[in-house]
Length: 470
Image 1 (cartoon, rainbow, N blue to C red):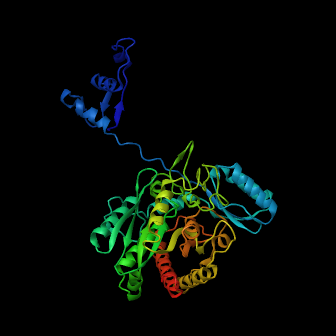
Image 2 (image 1 turned 45 degrees about the vertical axis):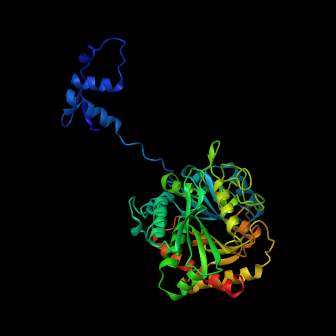
């Protein structure tokens, strides 16, 4: 709508009838007609023939832009818990404050903990760590600057499937369009697959890659269950591309040795919301009173809610109102249960970030799975492959031993409930003390995906050598 110069002559307003309150549009037209408002360019809409054009212009004003969370001057701290007192202090802080977002929970002395502190509470937090002599460092002084840079690395709207690449991050719509295009280009090998619809009615979309052959075992790869971990869907799409298009004979042999189900974004509502609303969103988008979201990786029906999860819908690791309560969880569990025997699913892999870890069950307790030693050795070989390739150090071990206790995860369910023997969960780049947290630069996509794919190749090959696919 054009800007107007306003020049009031209050004597002209006396001509208006008393007690008359006109419709805003009629008032605008009246003020123009009596000369109170003059178009700075030309009052062409003031003619009778053109007054509908004004009405049309008013009705077609753009809708307000989506409201996005901001993290201006939000700081990221890393603290070291040196004593039981420190543990108690930060446990109390997590429960009491909605201005401090914890990456993990305070559990034991010697632990390092990453905490995001909003600008309004930086002074209070700084006072706290100094008052109790907590060793700390600031990883980021203005987290929004990282987010702004990350959004600039997103492929623009209208990017076609033929322009899909691993130098930028891609939206949910872009990923789905690329998957659909693959199924059209490779109909003899690629089948478009839907787990079902999400909480907000979006398709949970992936592909099946099968080159044919009798009695193949199957690898299932789940990615993007935590919405803010953008590097995970990017890595999943890279894996799909390599399985289909690599000219390396060893990779071609890997692709044909298994059937593959790969789902880049099993939490489509949450992933889309990280582009439209809050870059740091983790959960799905189910509504619970004044809060939204269930941490889907705490919602699976295996030792649900035993440890490492919250019963509060406002917390980032809310496990849900009951085991398997969420439609995304239900769609995935039903899909895999229906195929675990008929399609011989013997490998389950989950992609996350960050911390550079390759982990296996269990997360709910220190109990060791029956094939603990095999998984430990296979995981170590996969980590060594990454180190030999890129120099990056990935830590391997059980979830409970390696990162922190947590229950209700998809990999524990896959191994413990369905007895899928080769089950690993990745925490991709960056390192545990990353200054970027989940906001990994797009320049890291290809290096991260290359090393992850090489390690997955190692896992599958080594599992085969040990007889898991017979």
